[in-house]
Structure formats: structure tokens, C-alpha cells
Picture 1 (cartoon, rainbow, N blue to C red):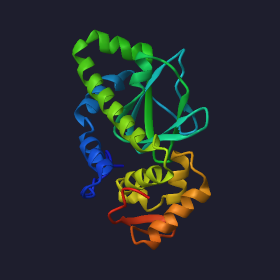
Picture 2 (picture 1 turned 180 degrees about the vertical axis):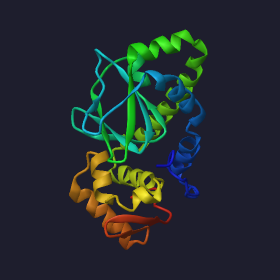
Picture 3 (picture 1 turned 135 degrees about the vertical axis):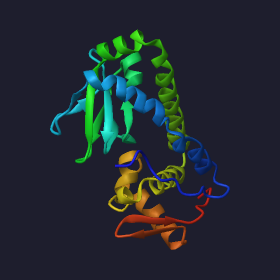
Length: 225
């Protein structure tokens, strides 16, 4: 699996998509690879059947080297983010353990983990490593802020519109096997009927093209519904 989505040109005049293009292409792979390199000697590969979660009592850092994992909220199983290899996951939990989230892995995923104690020993033993940690955390903060930009809107259309743009920016090989309806349902609290209604009207207006439930292309989406 690639290190992330191939980004298409931004939608002209689209504030959300313009913000998206300023964040997603700048994933700090140099920092991620540096941290994976120093953590790997003490990390253990996680078997495919084992669950992945965050414990406030025993934090762990996950090293995603192949595939994709999905970050879910425990309370309602809302899918917060899809994370593509290569990536380091759990740095925020390492510094401020809270729990309340878990990871769901795709079949082709390869992921290992290192205990929080070992990770902190490595970082404190080489203080210069806190710089790449900071850059990765800053990237996560921007991605979270971008997600909240459309999910916090009181209008259902804004959430659907934002998720369509997100989906269009995923790798083609991933997008062609994803149901648009399911993608939006898993990542929002919108009802199935509302999502279907908006998708139908966008298709009829020629704003999106779908084939067998998958997103093929997007024209310039209306800013308001």
C-alpha cells in the first residue's frame, strides 16, 4: 500500500478542499520513518487476529508499515480517521493516555507495537527525537481540525460534501471498492435516508458520478445546499 492518497487538483473556490490540499500532501514521512526506525528494534509484530486498542493504564505506540487501519471511537464506533502506511500511531496517547478509541485493521495491514515505557526510554535517551514526534503530532492536529471543519456544521450537506471530497482523495484502488453510502455512514452520525437523498440529488445535478455504489468523479460541488 502506498504511503497515502494521490491528491487530485483542488476544486476551484472550494475552501474545504483548498485546506485539504494544504495538509494531506505534507504528511511528514521523513519523521515517521525516523521514528519507525528507532522504535522497530523493540517492537513486536501484531498477529492479524489480535485487537488493537489504547489503554490509559498501559499505552502503546503502533508502527504501521503496510496497509491501512481505521481509528474508531469506542462510545459509538464512529470512524474518526483512516490511516495509511507508513505511520506512527499513538503518540498523543503516549504523552496523555486517555483510551476511548480503537483501531480496526484491513486484511493487508502489517502493524507492530512498542510499549509506552520502551518508547519513552528511547525518546528520553535521544532528546533530538522529540522534534520528529512534534511534527507528527502537529500533522495529526491539522488533520483532526480539517475533519471537524465539516463535521461540526449543523447542516447535513456540509458533512456529506466533506466526506465526498475526502473519499475522492483516497487512493483509486481503495476508492473503487468502497461504497459511498457506507463510507459516509461510518464517518458521520447522519441517517441512511438523509445520505441517500443528498447523494441522489447530487447525481441528478451532475455534480458526482457513481458506479455500482462507488465514487467515480466529482465536479464542482455546490458550497451550499
